[in-house]
Length: 167
Image (cartoon, rainbow, N blue to C red; front, side, top):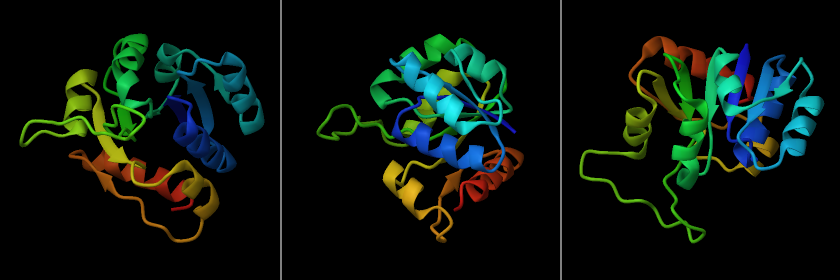
């Protein structure tokens, strides 16, 4: 499977590496350090590439959406349109280094906020409860990753990627 990663920080790197080990082709994007993206693609193998956020979405079967919460609007701007893509949303609404959380109206959530911003894409929430260090060190050890969303087919695909990552 071709997986576009929007936000190649700690979570994006950890999952990209785990998925590449299972044979997936990874498109790393949305980093301030282009050399880092090139190095990640090179070490991942499987014809993985450093890409723009736009190209990472256009070339992929599914998208891991993992930018910092304060940069999601910029990430979406760089993508343009998601055009019906399935998005694995790893974001948590931390608004500063002290991990203060953005407040939402009653009945609203961070995932609903992301869904409104990405338009016609299907958003599935996953991988937002484990730190990158845990993903890297506990893969294959039976930890559970929670998956939430309204689309059964998209959730099935994401659940396969959860298994491919060793969870």
